[in-house]
Length: 107
Image 1 (cartoon, helix red, strand yellow):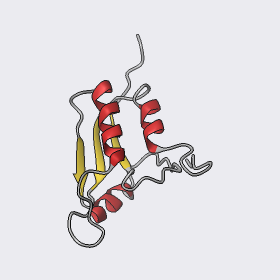
Image 2 (tube, rainbow, N blue to C red; image 1 turned 60 degrees about the vertical axis):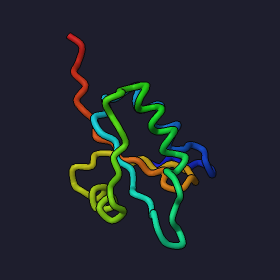
Image 3 (tube, rainbow, N blue to C red; image 1 turned 90 degrees about the vertical axis):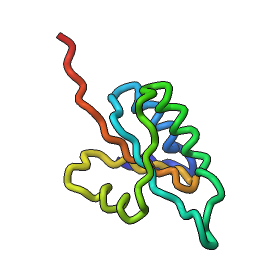
Image 4 (cartoon, helix red, strand yellow; image 1 turned 120 degrees about the horizontal axis):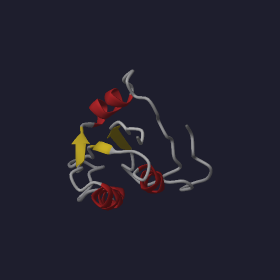
């Protein structure tokens, strides 16, 4: 489902903010960034702080878990992935993989 309308419209933070109101998030994974070499980052990407804030407000038990880059790609390509949302987010490492639970119908 592409939502990439224009650069940064819609971004991953906005999508996560909407999703947590509709689905129970059980786990949240981000792609591990480089910590050494010419493309290394000195600290977590800014998008991760926004993700953490939204997740903490929705379910404090869910913390961001890092997955090695190629393992992240492999996990995203599994047959049990039911929805991929492509945003126009231009922030580095603003990709997020969620594991969701079941929403029980109201009796």
